Length: 109
Length: 115
Image 1 (tube, chains in turn brown, purple):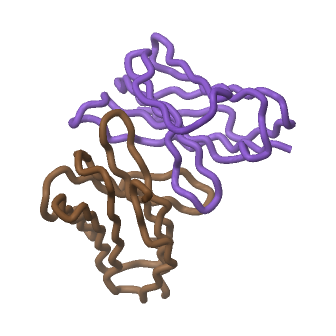
Image 2 (cartoon, rainbow over the protein chains, first blue to last red):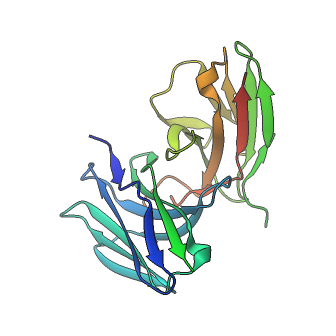
């Protein structure tokens, strides 16, 4: 079982729609959870982090964490073509941050 | 303030050679991590250093080594290069390794091609 699992996609949504990205993790002791965005040929850039169960909103982005279900999600409202990228879920436990393989998102104009 | 800086940005090496990649963390950050990312996969954890000590190591062979200097900069060394070592090598820094301040920020990466 992979430590952090994501649907590889691609996930295709029309412009203006809500994109929903999901992630599960295996280590129940994980304490910090992150979403990164990576454009083709570029390095990952941090979008959001979440530490506590529930929702955390930042502009058009909402991260959701459910530790009991070992589940993290990212909602992108009013999706724009510029949101088209690979979204990486990352989980920290101990001294390392582990990444999922990423979900490719396409936003169609 | 400058972000995480890495050098070189691109390099080509021959099988069997050795390579050294360099990283300077964000000012004030004491922890540096190294990741390998091959096409179509997420970053794979190689090492984490904090206060010049190795704090974590991923599932990579002993050909991979790293160190952190007193100014918190870091080097990643890979010996006896294989074709499969071709990848984007990412350096990331964080303030510390605790539950608060462990958010990692990436540099632009070093693209290594082994031929």
